Length: 57
Image (tube, helix red, strand yellow):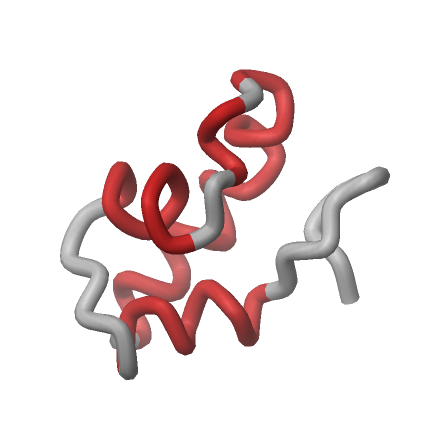
């Protein structure tokens, strides 16, 4: 399920970014792998899930 209204990013995509694309930091995962970080409001919506994905990685 999308992580917020108007977003297409899911937890699975974040986890993929960590496990298969090598994202090591929140900035790398949110800003570079998904581009969600381009909008501050959207970035805030996915931060908890991004931390979760990095912890799972």
